Every structure is written in structure tokens, then in C-alpha cells.
Amino acid sequence: MNKLGYARKEKVKEFMSVTGETDKIALQFMKTNDWHLEGALEKYYSQEHIKEAIEKKRWEMLFNKYKDPNVDMILADGISRLCDDLQVDPQDIVMLVLSWELKAENICEFSKQEFIGGVESLEIDSLETFKKKMPNLRAQLKDEDTFRDVYNFAFDWAREKTQKTLALETALALWHLLFAELDWPLIDQWCKFIQEHHNKAITRDVWLQLLEFARTVDATLSNYDAEGAWPCLLDDFVEYLYETGTCVKKSD
Image (cartoon, rainbow, N blue to C red):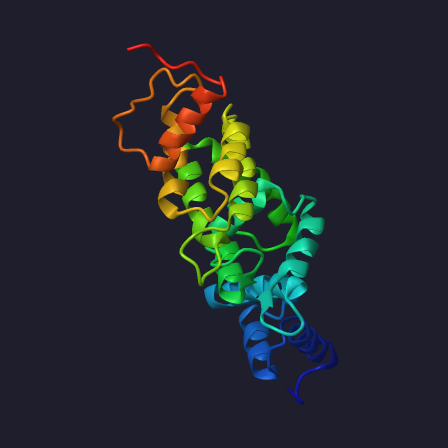
């Protein structure tokens, strides 16, 4: 490099400054691109392994922006700051969809692997692309199969991992959030019934079957089959609807 003229030395230094590479690599790219700095840089950044490294660095920077200072995870405070930057309410259902996309194991936290793997899969590399993805995430709920997947995911995501059931308070909050998307007319009656007549944690079977009930049994119960294989709690709910006059029982 000492044999180079001033102008070429400066180009090599600039290449090294921009890329962080050694003088040996800088010289190689400058020579093969006839000492055109822009061409050398374009060639350098067109390499697949360099593009992948740049993408990974962007994902790392995005993760580090929200990670907890004490653990290598994004916790509740970081998620709150992410929501502020995305201009969405932390209680917005789109954050549940995001957690599903990121394959998050626990509510209100993202591991580094979950977050980086998820944003990579979603092709997010900046806050701007993150913002642009949010309407698409929300729109996925219109697909019946995707909604079922998100609904089923929510049970394990939100439950205490030492428990097989979902805490009642958590279940009620999630039901209101999820069934608002379906406009299920009986959601308020269901939540009231659960609080008055059950008032304990929710099993996986009840959680899963409620969605099927809401989708297949109409709000007047006109097509309800008393001989169907519904959980006992759902059969009791039907009787509750008859007793409270919400629905009228069919005459035999």
C-alpha cells in the first residue's frame, strides 16, 4: 500500500472505513474494479455472505433496541417501547398475532432467538418495515384457519408454564379480545356465566371447543344438538341461556 499514490491510498482508506475490512481486501476490490470506489463498494456488498451479515446486524440492532439491560430478552418494558414505536396499543390483538408469528413461548416476552428468527421470517429489517407489516398481520385474522391457529396458540402462550390450565382472569381478557374479531353475540353472556357458575381456571378442552361452539352453533341455539360431544361446561352454558331467557328452548 505504501507504493500507492495519494489518491489511491485515500480510496483504499475510504473503502476500509465504509466496510470495516482490511487493507488487503480493500486493495483487492479496488484493483478488480479499476479503482472506481463506487463500483468496488457495489461489488463488495453484492456478495451473498456480506448481504446476509448486514441483514443479521440489522436484526441484532432491532433486538438490542428493545432488549432488557439485564437479560438477553425483550421483556414487558421493551415490548411497551416497541408498541410505542409501532404506534399500536400493547393490548391490541395484532400484538398477539405478532407473538404467534414469532413463535413466542411466553406472554410479554421475546427471546433473542424468537425475535430475530421471527423478524427474519417476516422480512423485517427496520422499524419502518415493521410498521408496514402490522396491517398485514392484522388482516391474517380474517382467514378462518389462521384465526384458529392464533386462538389455539394463545392458550399455551398465556398460561403459567407450571399449570396445565389457563387462569380465569387471563382467559376472560383473551376471550374478549379474540371474539371481538368474530363478533360473537354471546361472548358477554359466556363470560358472565363462567364467572358466576365456574369461577376457576379454564382447561384446554373448554378453550378449544368454545371456538368451535361459537362458529357452529348460532346465537339463538336453533341448531344446537344436545346429544353433541360438547364439554359439560358448554352444555351448562346452553341451559344458562335458556334459564336467563337469552334463548328460547326448542319444543320437542
